[in-house]
Image (cartoon, rainbow, N blue to C red; front, side, top):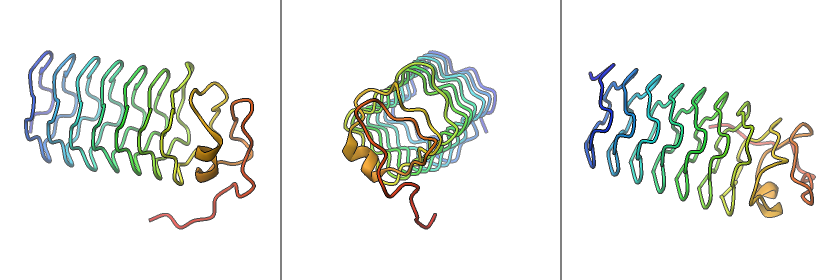
Length: 187
């Protein structure tokens, strides 16, 4: 139980925070590289400029976290909850984000280059600056109703694997796949 702790600027490299309650904590510019955060809660925490490179954080709660400018490069964060989080200018390059939830998150200016976004859910995500999806894996990624018209690096092959609908806005030159909306079982 570390709820509400001030860990700003702390070097927490490789620390095991499995199932730890870090809600409402100050992680401003903290280094959590290679930390284990499996089933931890960082909900409502401040983590501007924090380093989460190569963390292991399955089923972790990052909801409503303010992580502007944070780095999650090569992080293992499947089935994690980013709902309502401020993720502006966050680096998710090569991150494993399968089944992650981004509803109501602000992902303006974030980079998802080479990220695994299989079954991630971006419905309701907000952004005012272009998002970089260069070569991200979009298998059954939920993008229904999302305006992707200003996205960078998005290709037709990615959209062909994703799940959008008539409300999904696409960058110029890309077309809505015929099999949208997707018909599949949620697990």
